[in-house]
Amino acid sequence: MFRILKKRPQKQHPIEGMSNRNLPLSSELDKNLQILKSIYKGCIDVIYHPFLIAGKTKALLVYIDGLSDTEQIDSSVLAPLMSKTIDKSINLQETCENIQLSNIRVVKTYDDCIKNISNGNPILLMEHEEQGAALGLAKWDKRSIIEPESESVIRGPREGFVETLGVNISMLRRKIRSPNLKMIKMNIGSYSDTSIIIAYIEGIANQSLIDEVQNRLQKVEVDSVLESGYIEELIEDNVFSPFPQLLDTERPDVASANLLEGRVVILVDGTPFVLIAPVSFFSFFQAPDDYYQRYLISSVIRIMRLFFMLISVFLPSLYVAVSSFHQEMVPTTLLLSMASLRESVPFTALIEALIMEIVFEALREAGLRLPKQIGAAVSIVGALVIGQAAVQAGLVSPLMVIVVAITGIASFMVPRYSEGIALRLIRFPIMMLAGTMGLHGLVFGFIAIVIHLCKLRSFGVPYLSPIAPTIGREMKDAFIRSPWWMLNTRPHLTGRINKYRQAPNQQPKPKK
Image (cartoon, rainbow, N blue to C red; front, side):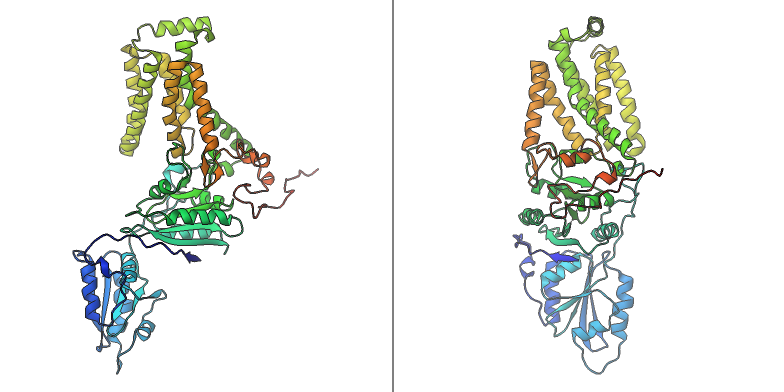
């Protein structure tokens, strides 16, 4: 169920033939062919197939080779129309009745023709007809549905979104089989004309949120949208914040769960990553299988994620501050050991930490970009070899290698890459503050981060909710994951309309 959103006319680029796009189709077939050829000048993959319907009426079929199903064109369109025997010329409506297809739409302008041809739907034009027919015969290679590598789970569905918008919509429909799942379609990009779907559940999502998402997307005027990341940067609240304000996911179950909590899902044609809005800071520490395992296990793991997140951000800074300014905080035995280990190191603790952290991040990035067969091996072996060589050369101390290793392991605990890389980036300015002002600088950095997070919004929703503002009943799914029989209500800031999502008093009671 789609609702087509009216889009503001975008500025067209001065390309030959583009000025004819908004003109209505002509009743002269030769003129239509001439204009289409001028628009698609230099496009060798556009096929123009003239033929006679029943040996009498001139017709033209236009499609792009590789986007349309040529076998169906031959069997369902050309064969029945060319073999039909009639005594008089027939119009477009009568012609479409002889085509064995369920998806046929009328087109009246050249712009309609171009959009359908680009989507793989052949256009049928006839002599003496001021309109044509778009035949639903799109067909191109699709990637099979597999488990997303970036969001693998121990327990849960093993399917992920693909690059085809229709397949992604059907996967959402399989999860939420209600007519209240509504979808608004629009196109963005003067060249790519990329299809965008705004999905929400009527009766759960706030209308103000839906309107805000539409308004922000309507303001986007770009040449192309090749991935959902284009959209994310153009509609987020604070473009200068390192923290992501929309959640991206490849999993239909994650998208469906957020829809049921009153959020909006944005699907972009050509990418398996969909966007979810609004989100909070804690949304990025919730893994999909938190909700498929027992709540005690999920709660402990979630607390560990938050704890190790703090370690990944502040541990190197704490080491730099203590070793440089606050040696009195270290026990004497440990202090003597640290001094002996750093005796041959020519750099300060800050320079030492920066060198090791930059090298570690470089190795991690190299491991991501290398082929999968050797990426992991290069990362592990590189870290071991470089760390050991740096210690033997006296460039860094063994304790710094341990600190960097613990920090790296802790950073892998963040389940969302976009949030994890933001935390890795802010680690460096905090280290510099700690290296110049000690623990005072570390505290100042922590306070600055908290203030920034308190000011941050995701489509108007406070980023630190349910902590700031404090919403007690939503704490049940923030630091911990409460059992399902306690999660009776939807999030306050997204699911206000339909507050309750399940019946109360469903706690299992043991038999006596």
